[in-house]
Image (cartoon, rainbow, N blue to C red; front, side, top):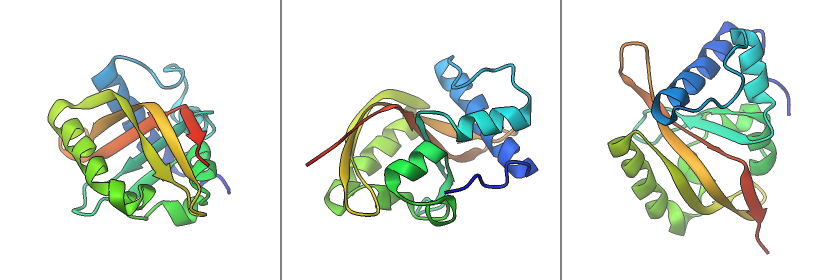
Length: 156
């Protein structure tokens, strides 16, 4: 797993979008708000908690996965980014996941999500106290959704 072009302006811009929208909805900062854009992107990428985001497609695809997310889902950046985000849940739990995303679309964010997810190897894990929030661009247009959590437990 490697850092996806940390010097790339897109990476800093996308991290800024995630951070700005999280602060807008929750009133809280994920990382130090005083960091310059490139350092903020690097701090978010290396954070000890999971941060994921997906786009606004009809079948949303991951557009961001920090290193903690890559490790947990057992996929490097090149595999997880672009993957339909529904694959992060087992088939029978996808309807529950869709209800969660609708709730976020309607309310802007939630910070009480718990659920079961699955890694590439089939290893299942539960997540708790996840925050899921809407993303919007500078013009206020929908830009996807993001999630962050630091609480997970592998299941037998």
